[in-house]
Amino acid sequence: MYGKLSFHELEQIHSNLPHLRHLELRRLCTIGDIPRDAIPCNTLRTLKLEMRNGHLWGQYFALKYANLEELHILNRHPIPLSFVREIKFLASANKHLKVLNTAGESSYSILKILARVNAPVAAIHHTISDAFLFSKMIRSFQNSLSTISVSDQPEISRAEVLQQLQSCPSLINLDLWWLGGVVEIDWILSKLPNLKQLSVQADSISVSSTHGIARTHRKLEKLELDAHDISDKTYMYLSKSCTRLYFLSCWYLAEVVQSRTVYYPHTGLKCLQIRNGGASTFCTSGPTHCMYKLIRMNEVERIRERDEQHDRLAEDMERRTSAGAQWFHRTSWYDKMDVHPMKTPSDAQNKLCVYSDRECCYTQSTTPETRGNQQKPGNIPVVSIVCHYVDEIKLDGLQVLS
Image 1: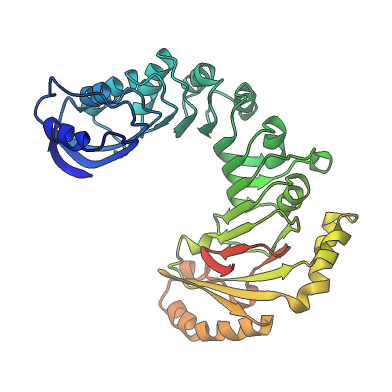
Image 2 (image 1 turned 45 degrees about the vertical axis):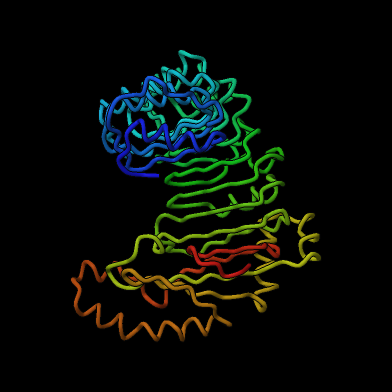
């Protein structure tokens, strides 16, 4: 629902929906005064608001909906101070709120109110970058918090962040934005073994030198990795240690310039998504290319690998089954990206010839500096994927197997 509405009109609409549990109002402009005979609604649990104009709406919704479990403020940052005041009215009336989703600094003051009324907040969908506020929010909601987003904080180390998160027994969903240095996945999971979903964005993602003796993590089900560099060892560790993982998404934020191996033979995996940086940031300095080689293991090969070293097996598996590999060629040119299935590596090289004339013409019209950044057809990186028969595989956002 969206548009300009008076509070009396909202009352009339609501009178015809006595059992409403979910309400979404977009681009709403409220007019008029709050009716004296406004009737509270005890059934509504989720409220999503995008306000354009008006006043008193926070007070009206606080009177109307005092049993909310989810509050989503859909306005983009920055939110006007007058709106923040109205949101505070609404938040202070809802002592049972579990999910807060709002943008910018407004969330800080709202969280303080929710902590004051002892609301059982379970999910904070806003990246907390202030160290003092982060510590305060953890203390306030440590018994109920299940979902949180965290970014790097100069005043507090990453080890201290994980130590504080360990005090949250219900935490199962974590979103980390740690953009400096190397982030070791096994270290995170060893500190927070109850995680079911983990999303990490970093400059580099790998595993520690002790990952070979890491314990099994039986709860992690969904993992998203976004980084300029993701170590091949990461996948070997995940396949061996995360036995319930069914969804794995890996995004190389920078264009892959050297061959990679995604080795994941565990049969629990149902969905695998691989993205290369050039697929999202389209190249304007000439076409970019990437080859994907997909090798799928049968049950005999999978059983054999259990007693062998993962490092050696990844190489052996690629050599033994390359004849039956499936090849895909990805090209990105300005605003167009394509993934083409190929029968053999030679087919891919032939495909590159289609782009050669176009590439040569473009090279003649570019500067020497830009020309130096272009990818040469003979240096196309190969991303090898070794896995069992996964239900769904997506390469650069395009579904190639299902």
